[in-house]
Amino acid sequence: MPTAPNSLRRLDAARIRRDFPILDRQAHPGVPLVYLDSTATSQKPLVVIEAMDRYHRVSNANIHRGIHVLAEEATSLYEAAREKTARFISAPSARQVIFTRNTTESINLVAYSWGRANLQSGDVIILTEMEHHSNLVPWQILAAERNIRLEFIPVTSEGLLDLQVYRDLLKLEPKLVGFTHMSNVLGTITPAAEIIRLAHQAGAVTLVDGAQSVPHFPVDVKELDIDFLAFSSHKMCGPTGIGVLYGRKSLLEAMPPFMGGGDMIKTVHLRSFVPNEIPYKFEAGTPAIAEAVGMGAAVDYLVTTGMELIAHHEYEIVAYALERLEEIPGVRIFGPTAEHRGGIVSFTLSGIHPHDISQILDAEGIAIRAGHHCAQPLHEKFKIPATARASFYLYNTMEEVDHLANSLYKVLKVFGN
Image (cartoon, rainbow, N blue to C red; front, side, top):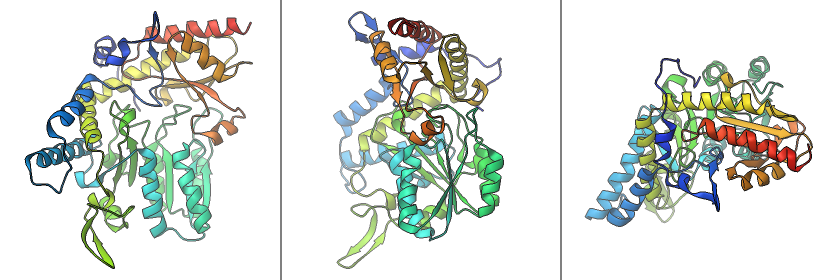
């Protein structure tokens, strides 16, 4: 769990905020920005911005093919980012880290490559009711194509996964169990180690959507025994346009290429080709080189800050946010207690549409998200069309939580509540 003992030193959010230039801006004239939308995308520290700028100014070139100085520098920076990312998640080898565009592409890679090579008509995939569309739609497409059966671990009224139903579903002998490590709506931190252990006992391969977990608390792929892990740079202080798929070596080596083109081959003839070794087999074409450099800088920043400190800071922030929001008349908060959730609070106000909440909060300088958050089935589960979502990261403060709560009282006043 992403909590920490009280003896752990606290993260200095006021100091951290000075590293993020955008947090100095005003949302509107005279209205400071309060950014509470890090679940959608995080802000970027100056070291990430400067690393990408330095690459463009000094070392910009294509990678792997050239032997001139710029190409060698660019290749070194790109592969250094891969090494840093591998260490960040405790991957046994950097070769098991594949750069993609984002979490969505990483999951699609597994569905299109591993899924189409290993799943047949009648096979079972187990997912959960709290999945983001990116870990739902690719499997729906494959299920329709191959007549595969999709089953779902239910979400309880408290926002937790029903593990007894999961144990019953495992009797169907699924080929794959895919699940989010942390819900982008409920904030629920799922018991990944237990889910994976049970899946492996049933003979299933596991896929973990780590888009919301990897940026916020330590994730160790060896300790959790993960087969596939997908996550995105832009949610962990890095740039958009680059993500990661970690995979077990034996699985990646057996999988066919995802896309064809340059750099993913060893040899090509007019009627045949031999694919490259991993990870290059899955990285066709010129990659997002500057973005990889930025991601490497983001990893360095998070490691230097301390993932345990970040996790504990978010725990304290979300616990306080739950306390403050629960005071507000007509509020309905979705998801578990602070002990079981990350830095996300999704809520509704009686009689007020989340889009109206978001618009009024924006006038107060507060950036939140309103909608179904790419998790429509989960909202259908709770019989609501949308929620307002405030999400927190290492640069948020208790004072910003107070501003959110006080501004929600203004929302009520506007609507005469």
